[in-house]
Length: 347
Ligand code: SF4
Image (cartoon, rainbow, N blue to C red):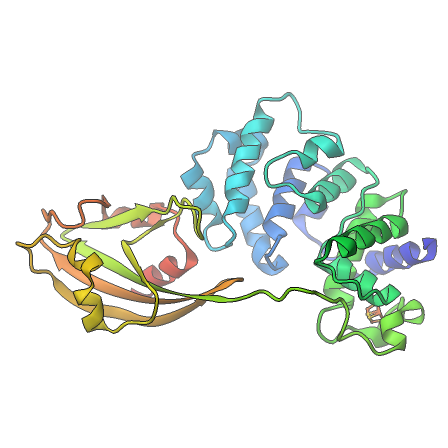
C-alpha cells in the first residue's frame, strides 16, 4: 500500500498542474475552489475562482454580500445550490472567531460532504482524511479490480476504507491532490494512458483489460425532458422578470415570464394557451412573434427545449402585473441561468 502512495506522489511531483488554489493553505480559498470544482472542469472553474476570490477575498466579505450578487458571480457554473449553500455557510462561519478547524466542524457546514471536508482538512490542516471523488473511485476500482457498484452503500464504504488505507499519512493534502490529478490526467474515464502508467504493473484492469468496465455504477441517470416557453416583454423601456423560488432547478435565479408545457408546441398553440391569455389584459392587443425556437439546453438530469417569444406592449401596460417590472437596461444585473443568458447574448 505504501508503495502505491509513493508512486502516486512521485507521479504528482512530475505532472501536477499549477493552479491558484494549490499555492495556499488558507481553508477559505480551498473550500471555495473545492465547491467550484465539483461538477465543473478545471479550465472553466479557474476563471470563476479568480473572479470569486477577487470579489469575496475572505469569509466575512462573502457573508456580508447579498445572495443575488453571489449567484451573479456563479452565473453559468450551474448547480446553483452550491453557491446558495456557500453563502449560508459563510454566514455561520462569520459568527465565529476562526474558520472551523476539525473534520467534524468542517463537515457540519452547509453543503460540505465527506469529500469536501476531507479535501479542506487534509490540504489546509494536514489532517489524515482521504478524499473519495469520481477520480478516486476510478483509480481504486481499476487498480484493485473492484466491481462493487460505487453508488451502493456497500461500495461507498469499501472505497472509503481502501482510499484511507492507501493514503500517505505524512502528506495527506498532497497525496489527495495527487490521486485526484492522477485520475483526471492519467487514469481517465476513456482511453486511460496505461502504456505509460507507473501503476500498470500492479493494476488489475490493465492486466485483465477491464479498463472499460470499471468502475461499476448500478443506477443510470434518467434524463427528463422539459419544455420551456419564455416571454420577453418589450413595454417601452421596461420588461418583466420573475425570481424562481420553488425547489426546482435554478432556485433563486431570475428569468423572463415562463410557461412550461408538457410537450413541444407551435406558435399558434402557444398564443392560445389559457396561461398566456391570462397574462394579457383583455383591452390590450400585443404584437407577438417567436424569436428563438427549439433551443436545446442539456443539464445533468434534464434536457430543456426552449422557445422565446417577444411580446410588444405599451409602456404603461397592465398586463404581466404578477411579475416584477424592471428597466431592460438593468437586466444584466440579475443572476440568470445560462440558458436565459445565452438568449440575451444572441439578441
Ligand atoms: S494501468 Fe491504466 S487503468 Fe491501471 S491505473 Fe494505470 S492508467 Fe489506470
